[in-house]
Every structure is written in structure tokens, then in C-alpha cells.
Image (tube, rainbow, N blue to C red; front, side, top):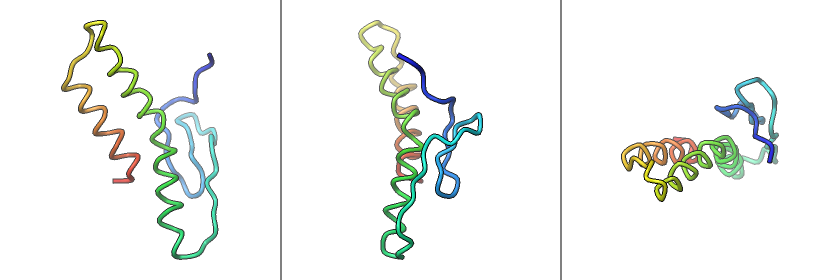
Length: 86
């Protein structure tokens, strides 16, 4: 399995951009005022995808005895906040 583009990903305009400057996605949509919040929420969720994956992978290390619950909560909170755009 190959790896994804380097972290962090950020939402810049209509694009999701990786740390190395590569555009990993474009999120366009109608410029109707009533759809802008949905478009922006989709951008935030896509930009947070790598952090969400990283947090879930860390949580799965629980069985191996390598898991710190406070670190897991911190990672999860940060990823959720980024996904929600807050």
C-alpha cells in the first residue's frame, strides 16, 4: 500500500493542499449562498482525513499495550475539530 501525501493537509480556497504543496483535491460547487456552508464543511472534512486516519490507527494500538488514552483523546479532539472546521 502506498502512502498519502505528507501532513498536514489544509483547505486553501477550493483546494486541499498537502504540506509539500501538492493539490490532493479540489472541492468546487455552486456559489449559491445557501450551499457555501456545505461546500466549506466538505473542504474541512477532506483536509482532516489524514489526521482522522492517524488518530484511528493510534487507537488501534491499544491491543499492543502501546496506547496512551490521553494522547488518543488529544489526537481525536484535534482531528474532529479540524474536520468540523473549528
